[in-house]
Length: 276
Image 1 (cartoon, one colour):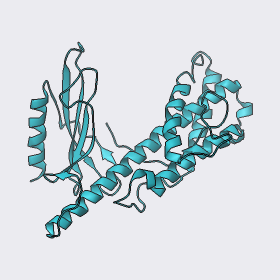
Image 2 (cartoon, one colour; image 1 turned 180 degrees about the vertical axis):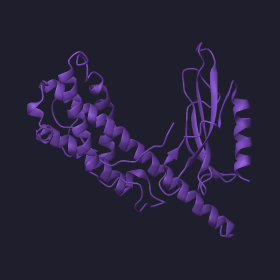
Image 3 (cartoon, one colour; image 1 turned 90 degrees about the vertical axis):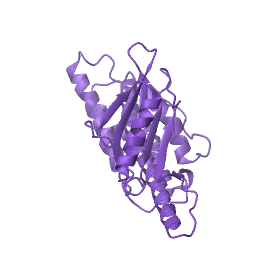
């Protein structure tokens, strides 16, 4: 629930530490490609970052201070990510200067960390933490920031798709012939993954909206308590056409079903209601 917030930052891999994959000895690839590679590594490396510190309040506080300081620093390095900005509706993410800049900023911050500049910014030498602990905690901060940047990139993709669909719909209304906007019946599927029929072990998710107003529905599945059946959920949501931000704070308009057919009946009813 809540809204997806878009952030910018940049980081990439350096040598050593729990996260490898830097550009040492070779030319770096596209920033987005490196970010996609590093993200799972940061998450894995941060998994045990706070291990063994719960019983040592001073060390736990120091660990929290280090992560918070890194996050403040990374969030301040806005490499092109933000709510608005110019966006080529006919472009794609790989050629989006804003997306590449946001990725490059986070990637560059990781390389700077490898050079030893990170701890100095947060008085790392004075913290009662080992070098290995600092490395894991730093990875934890980068993992958090990576999640924020990925959320911003997703919002940017939604914004581009909705803008293109709305433009093409306007062209069609003007009798000039619609472009390839991906709109069916006025609604646009922004995201779809998994088996729509429902599988206890493979989640299904579909987000579809009216590209002009941004009103829409979110369809999701999850296993039931016995893991032998599927719960099909439908929720009314909205996506801001100007920013691509998804808002799901609408708990009063949430429905669950035991079949895909019943779920799709609800989706069709919601579409009809929202279209009027």
